[in-house]
Image 1 (cartoon, rainbow, N blue to C red):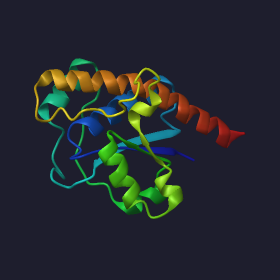
Image 2 (image 1 turned 90 degrees about the vertical axis):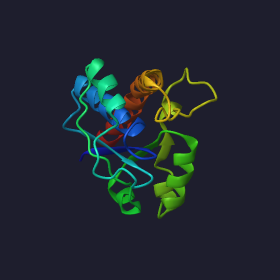
Image 3 (image 1 turned 90 degrees about the horizontal axis):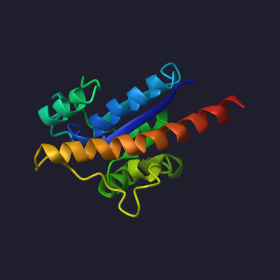
Length: 163
């Protein structure tokens, strides 16, 4: 049975598609493509149907990641098919937990940087949308750092299912 992860930010054109792309690469490197699926969405539908922000695309491609993406809005009905919902900042975390139909579903929502032991107390990935390219580079660094721990947590879940 596939383990499903969905990354969520505001409009699904900057942070969450970046996190999805990086995590998919980590999953592929680990040889887990047939066991783990990743996608992304936004808390709002402002950019639905649009590609990722051009700065997200260029930073991803420059670092060797896939940048194929179409923005969409997260729907509460998705909780039923997801194992983990990864929020990119505390605002998303709160919004997603409010959307969750059950307490169990609310428990599926985690902050991405909570998987990075070096993140310290600030677990938000800042929104790079209104800034320059350096904000997108910083976002990628945070996403990459957290993806390693996230993959380890998902691998542990998979091993628990197999036991």
